Image (cartoon, rainbow, N blue to C red; front, side, top):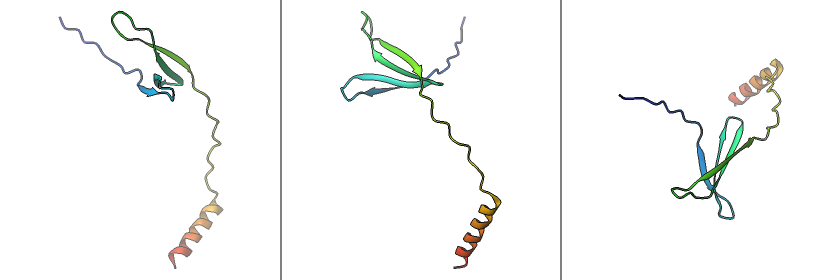
Length: 85
């Protein structure tokens, strides 16, 4: 009997090194920041301790305004004057 297991990628962590030389993992999961530090090794393998925290809120960007018709007409007129040179 064969069973098929579907794998779903949860996140990607990047291995980094601090200025002090400490290795750590860094990544993101939606609105969360994920960081991992080496844990205490077990008898069989190395371990990593993962921590999550909320990412800092980015300042809200003001909505982009479309140029007014007067601005577009002035830009067109300026471009035409350049093209005639």
